[in-house]
Amino acid sequence: MTDNIRKTFVIDTNVLIHRPDAILSFRDNDVIVPLWVLEELDKLKSSSDEKGRSARHAIRFMDEQSRKGDLSKGVKIANGIVLRVVMTEVNDASGQLLFNKIDNKIILAAAVLQKDGKNVFFVSKDINARVKAKALGIHAVDYETQKVNIDELYTGWRKITISNENLKEFKTHRKIEIQEKLTPNEFVVFSHGKDEKGNENIDGLGRIKKEQIALVSMNPRAVLGIKPLNEHQIMAMNLLLDDTIPLVTLVGKAGTGKTLLAICAGLFKVIEEKKYDKVLVSRPVVPMGKDIGYLPGDKDAKLANWMQPIFDNLDMIIGPGKKEGIRSLEWLTSNKMLEIEALTYIRGRSLPKQFLIVDEAQNLTPHEIKTIVSRAGKSTKVVLTGDPYQIDSPYLDASSNGLTYLVESFKGQALFGHVTLEHSERSVLAELAAELL
Image 1 (cartoon, rainbow, N blue to C red):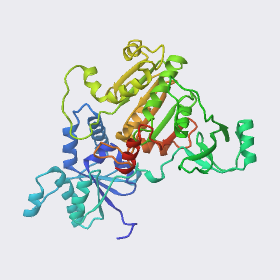
Image 2 (cartoon, one colour):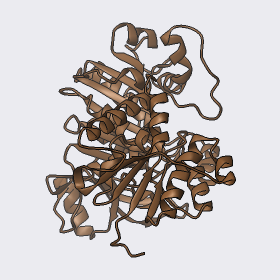
Image 3 (cartoon, rainbow, N blue to C red):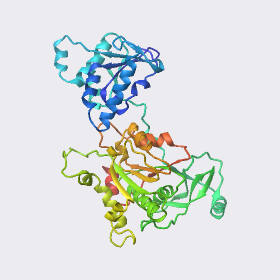
Image 4 (cartoon, rainbow, N blue to C red):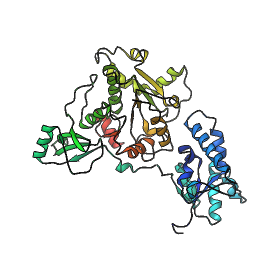
């Protein structure tokens, strides 16, 4: 079969949960939705979480397309796509054996279409479902429309070598123009190699502003008692404290200081500079390992367990002897300077003049990230932090999660800044574990 033959894409339920309008991605091809997919969407639609919302969105999309014709025969929709809903019939005994699970019924729909001579591709976010499809001789692929190459993810900084004369000019005039094409808000590290301990010999640090490299101090002042410990933390704090950049992403392994720096900058902006009304900190409620089930207490009591990492970082900032004027966590919350909320409750809200921090953003889909960032009201700053290599969601990976997708999508925008932090400052053991495990 050649590439110009019209393809038939059989869509698994999890693809529509990942992106409810994913069908529109398969331009000039046939898209098949097995009836069993609609059955699974029906079971999910009453849920109040993101899966339920995606299911309802996907069902509404299917309903809109059904008004254009008979879905059982195929309906031509946007982008030259023909959409069809099929009901699989299996007559042989082996097929009946496989027919006992809905996942298998969806895969068998692809098998039947392939047997009829169609150029079939089974699309699923479920790795095991793809393996089963391949075992039946079916082309099985991941939904990769919103995937990025994690190995080439934009870092937000680069190293450049310049002459001593230009370096002197840069430090004297606090800016310099160079011929190399750079990205807005990208950082530039002027370096002449590494020392005997393997540490970078940094001659200067700058950030792209209006097609020039503006000097960034390598010895910034402490913020609420917290001072950046390496060049990447200096970059991160520079973006966090810049009110002209309303969207910041911080990516890095455990212990690089992403969350601590974000919370520290947010509290500084609210308490000291009064640029924002409050710091709103949130994170997705996705368990690592087996879920422990329902938790007792009211909403605050339930959230306390999920938000403990946030409290740990707050203790670093407002603990005993850290910062005068910030009496306690209770003082911050009672004066409405700090709010800690689950992402579930952010949908539908408008968030003006707030410093919004979303921790562990790698566990969110591109659709969820879009929903969160679009909540930002006037004069709100959004900061997303996470480690793409520590994902707890079963249908996301380092290349397909919403955090990395946003980084690549917003790269080059003047309102966006990003830093990939490389050095763990938590402990030698933490850094070694992040590298080896």
